[in-house]
Length: 113
Length: 116
Image 1 (cartoon, chains in turn orange, brown):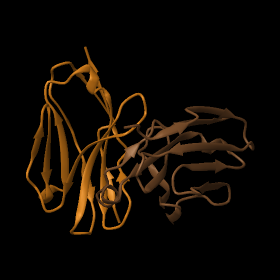
Image 2 (cartoon, rainbow over the protein chains, first blue to last red; image 1 turned 135 degrees about the vertical axis):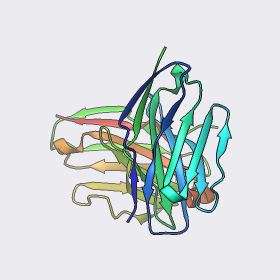
Image 3 (cartoon, each protein chain N blue to C red; image 1 turned 30 degrees about the vertical axis):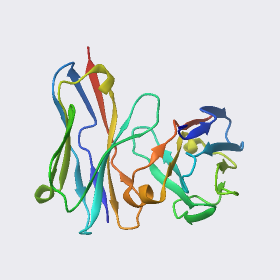
C-alpha cells in the first residue's frame, strides 16, 4: 500500500522568510519515485522535482531545495527567501512501479508581503 | 508549445443533468490522464489512456462516468447523471512515454464542476 502524508495543511510566512514543507511517505517497494508539484491559484499543477529511491543526494535549484531521507521516509521541500509568487498549494507525490502517481493532500502556502 | 487545454473552465448544473469535459493534450504526448480533485485534497486518478486505449480505469465510477479518446489525441469525460457529490475539479494531464514512466505529467487548468 502507498501513502503520502503532508501533515501541514496551511502555512503562512512573511516574505523573505524561509519555509519547509514536510512530506512523509510509505511504500513496500524498494524502487520508487518521489515528486513535488505546485498548484498556483490558476489551477494547473506544475512539476517541480523528481527523485528516485536510489538517489538520496539533496538538490538545490535556485531558492528551492529538497531533502530526501530514506531512513525517515521523508522528502521535505524548502523555499529560501520566500516571495509572494510562491503562494500556492504544494503536493508531494509517490510513484511505484507501473502504478500511477499517488498524491498527498497538499500544503497551502501563503506568503504575506 | 501549447500546454494541456481543457474546457469548460467552469460549469454549473443541476443534479441529474449530464455534463461533458474536453481535453486536448500536449502535441505528441501519447498518455492522457483524467484526475478528480475534491476541495482540499490531492488529485485522484480516474482513467489513464495510452493512445486510444484505456489502460487503467479502475477508479472510474462506470455507472455514471464515461470517457473516450477516439483518435488517441483529445479526450472527453462525461458524467450522466450528475450528483451533488460530483462537485469537484476535473483535471486533465498528459505525458510523453518516458514522462509517464517517471511521473512527469503536464496538467491543464482544470474544469470546475458545481452541481446544485
